[in-house]
Length: 406
Ligand SMILES: [Zn+2]
Image 1 (cartoon, rainbow, N blue to C red):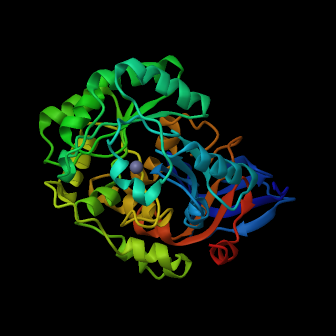
Image 2: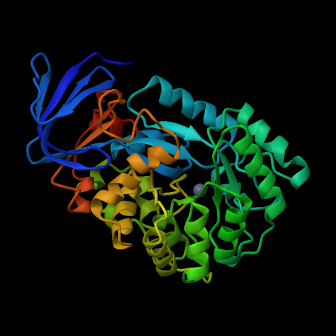
């Protein structure tokens, strides 16, 4: 599984997760980055000429639902870690085994099943993504036990779903603020993060009052008001806007542009390509413009934004694993992040917020999850898709072979 190659990427621009080194060398020994600098001795290392290219940390997609071949599709586009935000244990087990044993798929962390009520979100999507039954929270009385059960399943963090359907124009039952607070408190008692699905401003405020650490969508049912933005900022939470999915849900955005991009098209399976070229039509009060305004206002208020897509299965329209993260990075730049800040949102900031201490940066001792891209995505974010090579745990990915098996 782990090869024992030693290689040096030389004369390359390095975005280390925080800052840019215009020209340097990165040494990798086995699965680990061993040195980063501008004048390193690479004797004994296989040398890769990085001139004209940029080396960035493997990307982290902070909101996905991987099943089937999703983790293989993700790594094709430089996403070396996916953070699952709702699944069932049977599916999670299979994905974890792949991620642990192979380097030609992305790694995974998971919330396991999110805390929701009977008939609550995402029950309406179950026909698409999950046919299995899943446990739910009845109220504050069984909310702590729900969390303990998820921890017993190996959840890496706890997810809550707070959604009365307002943002989508489909009323549905939802977790109460009291139950949400019990979920959050129990997660914290066990040292786990609690993050919330909320797509309306009201739901975001409920989640924040319940004490969550992060919101894994940006609200889009209304334009942002200073009161809502200030409340979120003062709570110190991070936000994963998932603009690609908010835009699709609102009927305002598809992934057609990235699906048709000449750098990507040949690597995208047909069913995922079709999925990218469609979007939802919820007929709701929501809009991508609201979502982008909210993300921009949160950024201005100092709220850390993390990159995530909400890519799930074929049938969950407008997104695909891996490729959609590049569209999300471009949208984050449209919301006022610099290209470097957008890359940090998918690397160091993501790793810091989710406690992934072994990745997210290019630094000695960290796991060699790396992406070599042609051009300079620290200036032109669209260059992130000009992928030349991907490594996970120091092993270079055979992109053609991965594509053939999808
Ligand atoms: Zn989701």
